[in-house]
Image 1 (cartoon, rainbow, N blue to C red):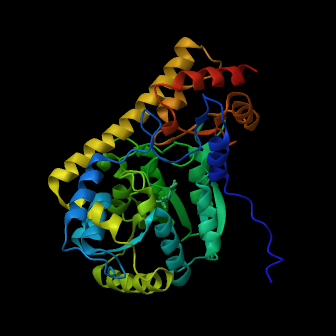
Image 2 (image 1 turned 180 degrees about the vertical axis):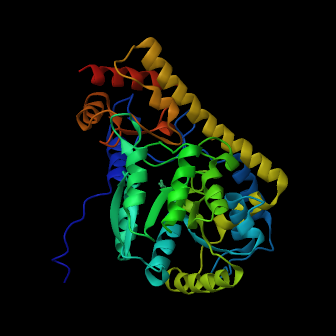
Length: 405
Ligand code: PMP
């Protein structure tokens, strides 16, 4: 039995981490990792998360019972307000079904599964439009539930920016009621987001063509340092009446990668519909995970529902986002002012979030790894979190060398 199972390739990102760990070169740099690192290249436990954990561990009234199937109610309610906004019309009208999920990945999965069961497809049955490129796992998640990914133009290598006309063209060309996956902020892997004016144009077409917005928001707060600013597009879509759901993750903005804290929020036209939607999400979650995990949800719930902890969290988020923004500025300064590296590097400071598409070729990426021990995906994506005050000059010098070669 199983002899006919083909050997699967190793996950490309985790493969990079393994290669980096095995490398004994002193100045090696890991720019593949999608997790925040501090200026000493160490994982950072947010001070507010430390505080919440301390309180939880000393609370002897807490037990290890199951959570409700749809999650810790104080967590899902707080999470919905965080992404949709305190004054969200959809929340005021009780037409959002929120369910705790296994982080953002679980939210994507549950949302995709729900679509397979209940979405009223147009002629584009069981297809999802994904940006080209997108987080590689999007392809796998949709395929796993029998939804076929098709791509829409997003990144333009010529401008190292958004292919806005290609994007709008695809929205217009898609049959009515098509499903479009959109990154709510800090697009992974490109770091290229639409401007507010571009979002407005996108929303107009979505409404006109009755498309469904499958919004994935894994980096709220992490992009600009401001939780509200990073949720702008999501809230704007609600206001405009775009049919939509949102996938939410607390992996990055709370540094809770391994705790798997997330939520899926499905916005419905009215309260009665929303009650039915939530009942079906509960049925699906029951068969998938039965009950979501407790610890991380308790941490996030405490932070979201305690005003002084919430303020402390915002400061921690600014620490992370601020360091990343500073690294962008430093890379830009070194390349343009000190090294006079050929080419235009404006995109380094214009892109947003954890990742940056450098615009270098696969051969140049490979050369960075082979010659300088700098690990990055071959599409030229770098994690800004892997840069710090000690290695940024080495990285820029190495990048300069491969670009000139
Ligand atoms: N969506 C996108 C676009 C992501 O980049 C990520 C994290 N890499 C996720 C979802 C989900 O991550 P997690 O399951 O750790 O919350």
